[in-house]
Length: 223
Image 1 (spheres, rainbow, N blue to C red):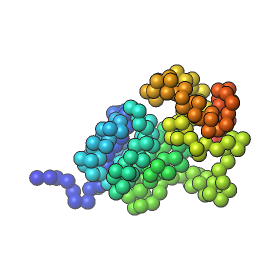
Image 2: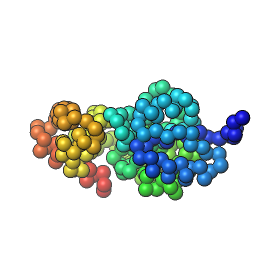
Image 3: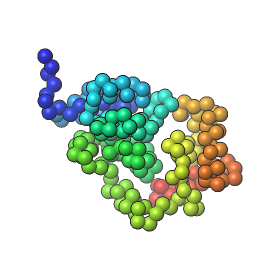
């Protein structure tokens, strides 16, 4: 006979670090009505668990093992399981990824450093159908809607795919092509191809210009 409470909220955790998953689980399950029904380290495992358990919410780390990142997974969940809410968990600053995560279908974005204190509130906010983001990010999105997007030297990054944007951000943080390939589990050829695509979309002439603009963009986001 099942011991599951009728009002339990079922949650799937997706993070490629088992210790982090266990830590989040312990925090979440301090609330009597919240239950972690499964944990996955990558996108393929996550989709199997979601199909099996039909959770109310999936908490997704933006950086996952395998070739599919957290934002791509959120998009896939929205397409295949539109009734399931997603909450993005990340070590990256909101200014770098939150807006893309929301556009992909996430109902909230929470930094890992504040997760132990705020994650239950974030879950409850999302389950109510509301968006969970910081006041700072909310103001930034409103300002963007009113005044339009402003990027380094007027070059918009909105045309970049999520993978291209991820690589653009890593370039801005000083990662070499070889380091990016290792970090994202991609071939050097694939990373170089993405770099060429980024230069083309942003109308940059060479790798030096790409690095310069990527660094400047990172600096602007940290202001």
